[in-house]
Length: 164
Image (cartoon, rainbow, N blue to C red; front, top):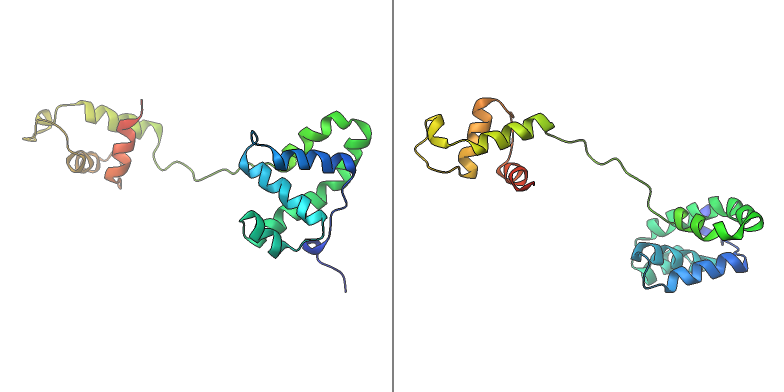
């Protein structure tokens, strides 16, 4: 029966091991990079994902993800090491960095945000209110009334008004 990739032990060269060791002991690098370096070093010692997870404070699935990612990139790291060892450190840093994620699309368009700010700059008395200043509930109700946004929370209005 074939072993799963998550159980495979990466065999590290002295150079790769030295780079990862330096990363894992660094106090100036991001903590996530230090943790991921420790994951690979512990995996190279044959330690299981469960054990590594408890040592570094991550879920074992995350440990498996980084172990697999490193194993997949190991052949190209060896080529870089043979061709130009000075690029090796940067390649390992890139490999152990989080990938960009798109995030959620914005809920409100820039035009809506500008219309909300414009409304907040107006005097509530000019729109028929007896208040001398806008309150968040009153402003939110007026935004909905004017059709600037169908649904908007007071927190969102507050966030837009705090922007500079």
